[in-house]
Length: 89
Image (cartoon, rainbow, N blue to C red; front, top):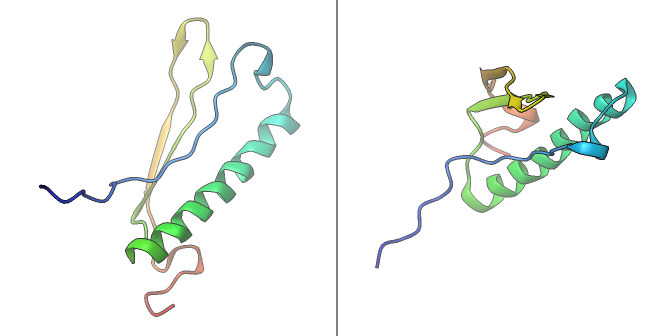
């Protein structure tokens, strides 16, 4: 039997289609913080469970325009220590 490997990524996302589409700035402004908090919780749990911290953060925004869903990606190396986490903590 082969041992299970740890997942290589942690993600969170939200899709807004049809009547749930974000149409005003306050609604759009709310979600990066909400998703960021969820991601922070997942990273903290992964750190406790697997004794590791993230090295890369990728953000993707896919605005829906007709049938085409394309948007920019941003990737950045995480500064050490990231999010106030230190190796000794």
